[in-house]
Length: 288
Image 1 (spheres, rainbow, N blue to C red):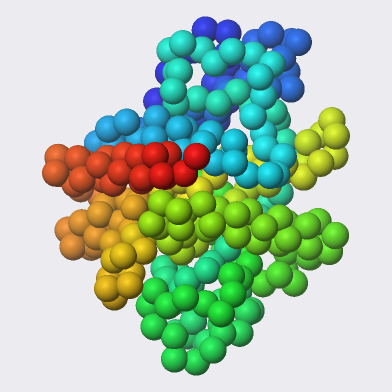
Image 2 (image 1 turned 180 degrees about the vertical axis):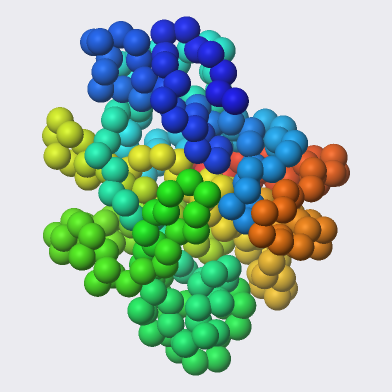
């Protein structure tokens, strides 16, 4: 359950984040985004939470925002409440696009499954013979339609994005996503990391009309990072994210409809928390 925060009214909880609106009428243009320690996999929120996860996500998102040359949702019009300091962001309310802006530089995850089925991802034709974890000839924009809480996002083609939001905005989202991915990939390389894929969420600032980067960005929850050295050794599945959780669940839960996932063992929680912490450490110490 979302916690009580003086001066802020809880309005929504997702799988990981809790959103609050200010009770001050002068600050109605703001939203308080609190990153919890909750972890989700296979469309379920799991127990127990991952220690310090919310802090790691917030630290990394803010670190990236400071280094990406694109408008973002961070606002300094109100202080972050002390009770959630370190894991919260005061942000401008945006008119969010219903699109997950996924960019892939390497082939893995659901993209690899789609590729195995018909040689393409979201309508983008790819060369034959690619193996899991292979580098793509160039990064590709593979969007998804954002589903309601508890449902799967739907991979869609660029043409479907145009149908949803119009050609001008669709083209802008694709261009921005590829630009941010390229910049982030350069910085990740300096830390000995590969940014295999990621997803961005954009909205329009209602005051300025500018397309603005929101939500989290380039975190272990939204991105797949690999060690460059491990990738060159042929290791393609040990990523800096919650893959440990997914692997354990796949081995210990049949995912039968209506069933409840088992509680995560303490060692899985500790290993996942350590992976998040290691990614933050590697990026923030290696890149100025």
